[in-house]
Image (cartoon, rainbow, N blue to C red):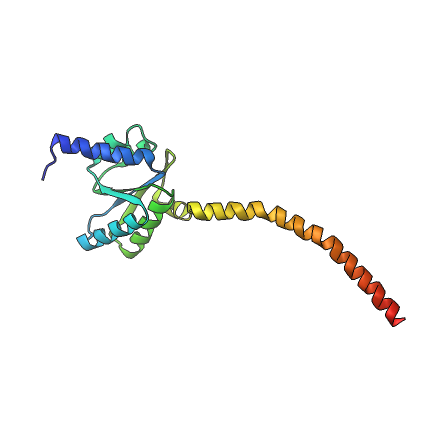
Length: 175
């Protein structure tokens, strides 16, 4: 069923709004998948806060204009599904990579992060980015390390004194 002009404008506006606020985007070919498989992909994407949409390429090109993902416009060919990470830069890559492992008909064709177009082979690099909570945890452990080392060092001075006094006491008792 063909979309009316108003429906097309609404689709372009919706995708453009999502693209402006997204951290990364993944485009993948989905032909050959069943409805159940696509439904399971959509459910997983919704759980991970990934916006997933099948959009005609001409509408997608218009929606991506002026966003960080405009670099994807030239390579939008064939039936594609677009996935946008809304909270975590690696979320869309993780969802699509995991789904592609289980479904051979699903092929990632391009990735984009921060206005840079990446090759599909770099999906592992994007998928392994830490989540926001993981990144904060890593930062906190790095910030805590010098303080912990200082506390251990300061604690070692009285400990060494106590061991020295104990060694002198043991030497006097033995003599």
